[in-house]
Length: 395
Image 1 (spheres, rainbow, N blue to C red):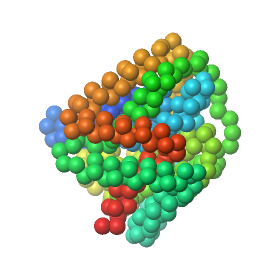
Image 2 (image 1 turned 90 degrees about the vertical axis):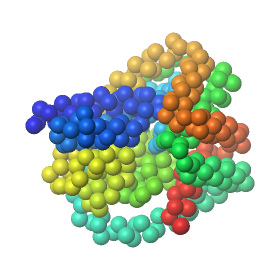
Image 3 (image 1 turned 45 degrees about the vertical axis):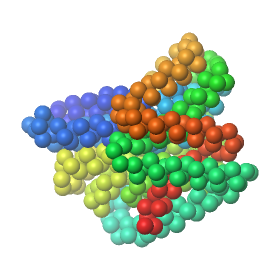
Image 4 (image 1 turned 180 degrees about the horizontal axis):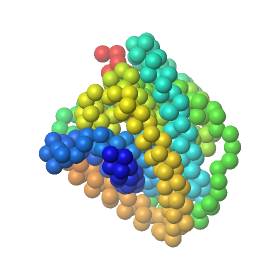
């Protein structure tokens, strides 16, 4: 059985690397396919092996998916806020450092998940009801703080309202597959790509330099908000990152560390939530729940071991890939690369979200470009997730 688990873990690492690098191919999609195949093609495969595969894939994905976000401007939920600071560092020749900052945040997050696992199993069932009641008011407070901290407060409010309404409409559309794909890819990805193409951005030779600094504060901030969001419905890593960035003024490097930690923490905490309060908070946790049914403490121990091993290996995978892309990105015409990435995003949206998704993608991209032109922080565009979540809790 141990050999099969190791084999499933290795396959999960490979799959997570692929889904992390491929814009639009999300782990939720792979998890849903596996669950459907578990009653047909994979009916003879032990569900434990499939669950180990999903856990390893999910953790690996949270490490790797910052690479296309920062290097290509092609985000997924949880990485969209990394585009602006990551792209700015990329234009200064510091793309490798930008990726490694998120990578450091993610690896620290893995150990935080392990440290908090046992206390959460005992404490969370008791405090969960109280946490659930305060989250909408916390989101409202964070939203107000984000707007009022801007120099152009009216513009920030307009961006918040525009993107919030857009997000609410898109997330409530019927017959739209994977609504976050066209919404986030348009708002944060296509808008940045369009501006890069228009300004004919030239990417300088990238410097391979190790990040330096103390990052206790962004790690602590990401832990607090990820813990709150990781156990609540409708609140994911994107909202946790927006809340953290809204409350604390961080510099570019601290911000990227916080994003990396948040992305991995929310995923790890969703596995703890599945065990401690029997709630699924991510697509990966939902897939494991469908496969396993009852989540025992023995299987939790297996999942935590998978989180640790896949996290450590993923750190070195990202380090290798970041160096590879940094060394070769300067050899490529960035305008052509941006055009190619935009074309790939259009194709993926068309295949996954159909014609309606294309309309959402184009509208979201236009809204993103307009919001950027107003010269307010792009964290305000996270209202596309924050506002629908607030409405969900208050209704």
